[in-house]
Image (cartoon, rainbow, N blue to C red; front, side, top):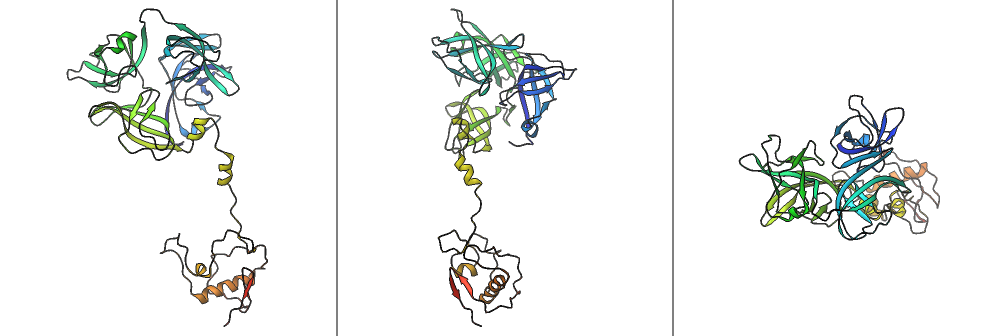
Length: 407
């Protein structure tokens, strides 16, 4: 992770540390809860939703305490009973679903193996601690009323505004890609990129033209949001992508159309997407991508760490060169190689020696070093070329054979 990157994270106060007015805050981005130091000017309590800001280096510090935060409006209904924080949401569940992949809470587990048919349910969830850490679980699953219920809090974003400035088109994931929700408002603060909570019923979502008279402006963004040069809606997201992937998907926006080349590396990417229509396709299009953290995807997808063998290869000690007759790794294998520069090095920087200079250098080195059949110390590359040993007639050893140098 880039330690200079600024992070804008939303979380929920789930615990308290007495008497220091310090609170534990859950957020999806961290495997463990943050410690937040309460500012008396911004009081908080269990169940409070907060927006925290810090940089990457602070995020990686295990003793980090959040000081920069603001209290925000809850996205989901939140209740506190003693020391337990419960949240209520409404979601479609497949029959006897074991785990739900939620866009905000991540994995929500059916840890009690509750059984239910496929339908829309009211969920009550809470956070518990197990052997692998803190997780969200389904404490209660209740069937909705027979009538089509209203869904308070469908999240939408204004994607385009009409010419008369009071008609706005709102994207939400629950609608088809080419069907926006329409709202009318004279509020000058509503523009492209404004986040809203829409009050709609399930039977309305399938309507081709859908006006929504009941909505609430969310005073913050859940993901970084901004208009493009042509005033089109753009989001900045993070997600993990496999090498070779073309079209990708994100839990919040769904499918993302990629008109560029496939991803050439596996890893965690920061991407910019734009709500647009290209030809007959309407939806989210990939606008920019940047590899943020490579080589972590295999461990992330399988739940396993990178193999120990791979780590051993990376940390393997360099091979010690020797003149032992057994086959070994050598940097040079011929007398020609010792006279000519390595082909891997740039030709303009590689030094060239005359045959006499090279032989003189070797003899000078051997006069200072005791040769054995098991090891040979590495020559210093900084030895002066014109330094000549007095033992010019000393025999030179190469692979166990004496080579006499005649004047």
